[in-house]
Image (tube, rainbow, N blue to C red):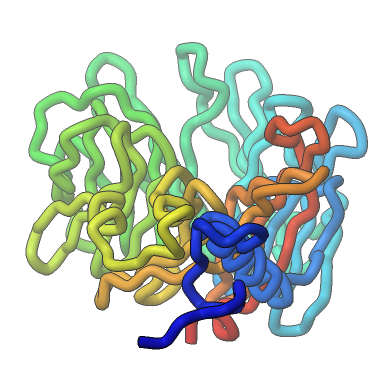
Length: 366
């Protein structure tokens, strides 16, 4: 039998005066991992900036020098920043949609809505604008989406004329494609909420249901969501992921199967340690990068591998100290560069703003 004559054993003896407890050791392990992960982050912009959104290798983000926002773009390929000089709206009516080639914004003026398309590579170069009749209710403008060089707008015809998907190539005329009633096979639709388009693929929400549709086919498939969408929706050719009350869900296109990713994360074998056994559980936000799903856990940013079911920490929030940091709104470029806001506060509550941090996920996950 080997007897320990001091407090130097790997397993702390709870009867040893001055020895660290198991909790102390696990807190130290957390701090060590947090510090190591912090070496992967670099401050991208200060707390003045927010609303980051990734499109390919471009990051769009805003600042609010006054009541009206200003739009900016960072190109990760050339490592250059572009500050746009055109307006994207005033106050709470600001809006824009972007692709790698276009930035589009909508402005209502009386009984018409003007959609203005700008060259995404220049600070203020209007390509074309088009006017559409304004919605008849309290809606400010028709929902719209941008992909490549095309702008899609969903309009509703009066007197039961249908919910139409329209396509506009700036410089040309607006083209009516088909109704969403035809696409879904529903004689009438529920309340239309929003949609997005990526290439030929369209996702839209109506009546609480989430639909997936290749535009070229004009045929939509319900993703089988049982509860209404309560947050973000992400989609690629193989899978649709969304936030709903109770967790994070996924619809796999090939098998038409519905899974609850937040439960898959909970069932994973990952555990930082016994003291911090739940910090990796899904809480909010997500962004897909290849097979990895980056998300907000209760103790920081984590990543879940959709193929292997493994979980990996990306950034951990400090559990002690005068500065509280809560990481929110992660987005990831095609090359694996993540941008995430670190909300900061010295009062103990969740901060209202904070810098946007930059992390190379290839260094963390591969």
